[in-house]
Length: 176
Image 1 (spheres, rainbow, N blue to C red):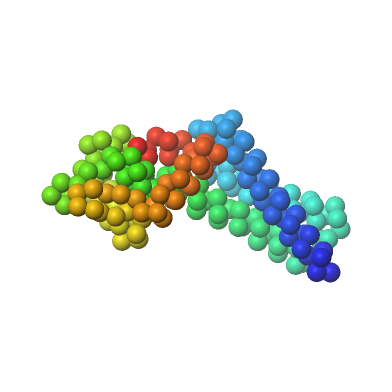
Image 2 (cartoon, rainbow, N blue to C red):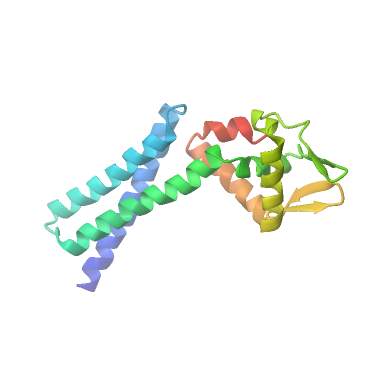
């Protein structure tokens, strides 16, 4: 019985990552389409695939249906929180700006002269995000220079990798 549960869990994990790969592939074909809707559809497909697997294996019971909903929900939450944050969040953009050395500090004020993104126009919001990232330990201010910490560099590299894998166009346009 325990071996059966482990096998089912492994199948669910395989389906989770397979649907993630399918989402990445579809994003390559249509990179400018709505990421939010694509994640919703992929989450649904993840659940349907697990349901069909359970149906074919005659393992359709209450506990397995809960597992199906759990895996589908985990897919939805993880992809929403990670991919949408990287693609649309000014908090991530400022990490990219600092990584590129595009944010300056003059008289304890942040300057965005070298930032290409239109997101820089709202300096109040950008200043707030930089202060938040400093408080979180993602960015450090050394004299008149902002640098990424190890955590900040890891977040930047993760954002870069995921933006390439999932064709996150907003990240590509706004991180510099």
